[in-house]
Length: 500
Length: 96
Image (cartoon, rainbow over all chains, first blue to last red; front, side, top):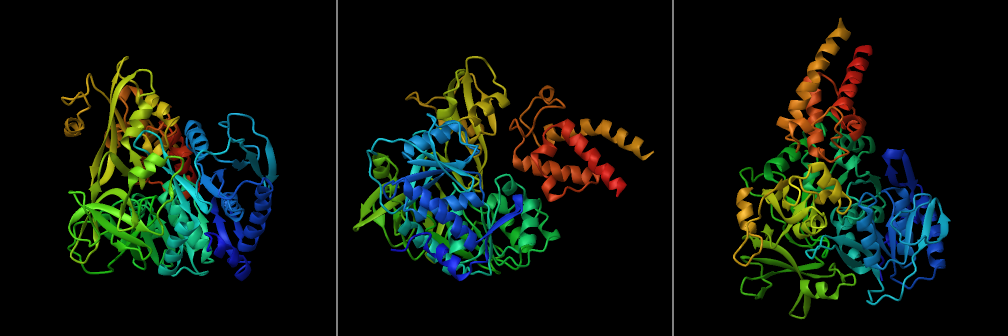
């Protein structure tokens, strides 16, 4: 069976001296041979611990060459990686570590995290990494042997959910992407997304499987369009994959016209809608590049795609379609009457089946069951996204069901923010709302009632920052004497929405 | 003469910057809460888009040019810090 990392190892034989990874922040780079050698060493240490196949290894490392070595070594040892966000609050990482039942944690030697409950013994220290085993009872819930990674997404119950992706599931996308975007050793990719965000799967696995060079950007660098511009020129970047939020900053704040980006041949975007005027501006700035819209929740990986036409359609006002199903995926519509239609016509909630589907949510069988439906002998994931098929069978995104919103490509359940705010001792009631433009979040507002009157912005945001990742923090906190209620004493969200 | 010019500019600078931050960027602060040493980035008052707009504002209005690696929280974190960074840029531009 094809493993997610197999072709990366082959590249070490084919192009041993080619540069695999660049880390501009430290002027560091690593060749395919070195990458392979370091991963083998760490893999041996992991194997010596004798974990069962598919056990989870938490990777608590800043984005770096070492982090990629750690991921590769984990996969080589037939284990699965769970990338933790080193910038996320300890409380959240501790939750993920426990919920995932990870067997061990890899961190930088000397910077072991404070959130491990006990002082776990450092069993090995390889190449500046420290490997700590986490004592566990036998896990209650089984997960697949060929589990490759676990990525957490925001959960409507107020707690994140761990999406389990297998080797074969991930490879279905990676192999397609590598071929479709004709990646080769001549290519230079950027890795803009953090490793706990699923866009990174393309950068790392499609890029390295093809023998390309991958330029790793740190989180603070990825917020600096001018720096991205300068790196693109310095390394001759050919392929970039990012969210529209970042990409649309490039013409104005990235000063892209002052740098040489003529090697850029393709721009892939995903995670949210790209407003047409901003997309046009970017196409004008990067005239050598072809543009592609990719779509897919973490649970399905990329499952539809749409090449943006180079010219023509100048009069187009509405965003481009998310497109048609990738060859390994199937799409269907869940109609309002509850029927499932595989011929894509009209409107409905998008259902996705096929090879790239997640194995389920880690240790959450009820939540897993709730998002799948069976039809025609297939298991379909209910995306919660409303779509409409156009006359060519291309799917157009029409918004979300429920109270999930997207910001910077991240899914955010507003209930998860409310849940965190409820933990503040002075907050009595709270309701979070998103102000959207062009189907994208502009602001998140938190309306609250308090026992002490207004609480300063910095105090609430600092309180939340200890519990939630940055992208989930509201932009404004608004004190209300009372929150509007429906007749059944629930918060009246439509009434609040009118106040926006 | 030139040094004197900078000092005069800089007296206005803080006031101009303060009103830009409050009125144009609409930072979530009451005017009296925005002190010269209020930590804008570290205390999550100013988000990354606002930071980029601030950089653009400073470049346009004070005739300086940020290098890519200078667009960082360390140079933009408070009114005092921004002032000293702009001063330093102006001084080094003069020296060059």
